Amino acid sequence: MKHTISLFLTLAAFWLLNSGHYSVLVLSLGLVSIALVLIISHKMDVVDQESQPIYLSTKILGYYLWLIKEIIKANITVVKHIWVGEKSISPTLKKIKISQQTDMGKVIYANSITLTPGTVAIDLVDNEITVHALLSKDIESLEVGEMDRRVTLLER
Image (tube, rainbow, N blue to C red; front, side, top):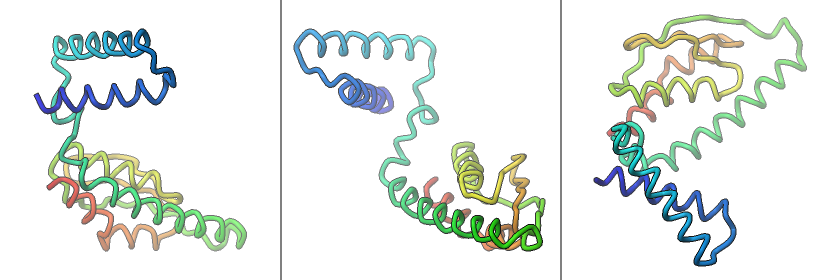
């Protein structure tokens, strides 16, 4: 039930932000369309912990702020190495062990790696992720495990 309420609130906020009109007719049409989506979602049995990860709500903002800082730092590093030239890069492909237990945590971690410039998550199998990096130091920083640790904290 809490996932359905979360979906309702998300859809209502999305509707209100995109509509920009708050007349009775528009609000009632929005309510009807949201109710229709909720009924269809329930019949399809797609409203669950995975589609509405409520447990992430309280912790995800801090992670996003940290990730944005890391993306900015990685952008600066990649631009620096582009300016220096081809000799400064050391492309590396390596499998890294991960500590996430849920599929959601594994996907967040893989996507976070890919969002960070200079690194791409290529494959995710069980508790290993294959990563390609422009610089070998990027692989080393992933092996240190700061991002892994932060994503694992999101799961709890």
